[in-house]
Length: 633
Image 1 (tube, rainbow, N blue to C red):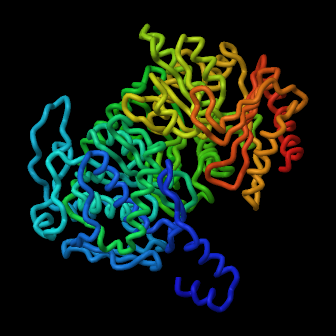
Image 2: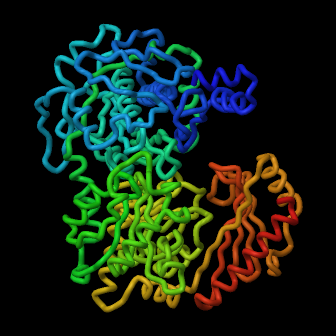
Image 3: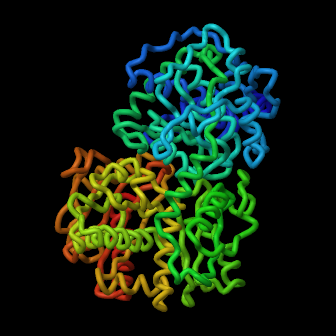
C-alpha cells in the first residue's frame, strides 16, 4: 500500500486511478450482501468492511427482535487497531489466541483449511455440558459447544450479556483467503451485540449454512464466500430466518441493513464496536443432519452399481461433505480430479473457478477420457452450483457440458413426477428465473402443477409459493426446498446421480433422458448474446431506445408483444428488464448484468426436434446481434 501511495504522489496515473478505485466509493451492500476484491480501502473486502457489516446486521437483527439499540460508544475487550486505510488490520486478541497473519492482501490462506477447526476450538475453549432436548427436535445448545468460562470471564463489563432467548445468528465460511478470519470477526461482533452467535465448526459448503439457519431456528445467517468469483475476491452473504424461512435477503431488508451499516461506518472508529468471545461453535451434528437429509433426496437404486463418473470440487469445499453423502446414499465413489479436490483459495489450476468458464473443466474431461466415464459432475468452490457433462463425439475433446437449462429441465421433470406420484399436486409449483427456459412451465402444466417465473436470483426463486423445485440457467438448482431454501449443488448432484442410475437400470443414458424429454415436452434451446461496454451509460441508452421504439422483428420473426418490467409486471416486482415475445413462440429477454458492465440478451426457442430447435436458436442469435447494432450496441 505504501508503494502505491508513493507512486500516486509521484503523479503515476495508474496508481492514482488505483487509489481512487479503492477509496473513491464504498463497496455497496445489497441483496447479494457484499462481494469484491480483497484489499485495503472502502471499496474492497477487508476486516474493517466486514466488521461494519456485522455490526450493521447485528443492529438490524436486534431491531427486528424488538431489542434496544446498543450504545455506540461501548468499549470492546478485543479491538481492531486500524482502519480501512491500513493494508493489515491486527487484533488485540486474548492471550489464549494464536497469533497469525490476517492481512487482507496476504497470499496465504489465513488459516482456511483443515487446521481452521483447531483454531476455532482454541477460541471457544473446552466443551460445556449441553442442555437436554427432544431427540426429534434438537435444541441449539445440544448442537453447539459453549464458550469456556475463562473466555466469558475475560469479557469487560461494558459488553452486553447474551440473553437466554437472544436471536440466533449462524456464521459459515468457505476456503477462500480470509474467509475464516471474517467469520470469526463476525461471530465476536454478533456475540458482542448480545446475540447468540453460532460459528459452524469448519469450512463448509454454502448450502450447509443455508440449512443451519433453519435447523437452529436462527434469525439470520452469514456465509463468507465469493462463490465462483476470481481468486482475489471474497464476499458476505446474508440469510434471514423466521418468515423468510432461511432465504437470502430481499428488499426492504437489504436497504434497512445497509442503512445500519452506513451508520456504523459513519461513526468511524470500529474499535468502539463491542466484541465478545461468548460465541458458540456448532458441533458436527448439524453437518450430520444435512448429510442425512441430502442423502434422502435420491437413495441409490440398483442401477447405480458399476457407475463410473468423475467429480471435481474446483478447489472448493464440496468434496468432504459430498463424499459422506455418497456413502450414506449408496453411490459408488467417483474418479476424483485430484488436483482440484481439496480447498485451495488460490485456485491454481483454473484462471476462473467457474464451471461455466471455458477451460475450467478441462482436467475433468481429461480424467473422464482416461476412466471411460459415463458423466462428469462438478461443483463450484462453495458447492452451491452444479455442472454436468456427458460424452459427445461431436464436441471438441469428446465431452460436452450441459447447459443450466438442460439440467434444470431434467431436474424439474423429476420433481414434477415425484409430486404427481404423491397425488397431492394442489398448491405445488415449479419456479425459475424469468431468463431461464420456458420449458419448465410446460413441464409444470403437463403435471398439473403451478408455475412461477421470478426475477433472477434464488432470493426470489426460493420464495415462490408451494415450490417443489426451482432453478436458474446459471447452474443453480433448488431440489430439496424442505431442507435448503437456496441453490444447492450437492443435493442437485445427488438428484442427477439418482436420475442417471435409474436410467442405467433400464439400459438408458443421460443423453437418452434428454431425448425423452424432447419427445414428451418439445425441444427447447437457449442461447445468450451480450455486449461488454467501457461506458456503462451506454447500457442505459440502449435500454431507453428499446423502450422508446419497440423492435418490429428479431431475426426475421415478428415481435408479438413486449413486456416492460420497469414498474413490475403481473406477479413480477419492478426490474430493468424487457421481455419480447415473437410470433413463433420464441422469446428474447434484455437486461443489464447485475455484476458486470454488460447488456445481456437471453434467447429461447421451441422446435419440433433438437435439430429444428438448434436452427431456430442460431437464427435468433444472429437477429439479436443485429438488434444490438441497430439500437446502439
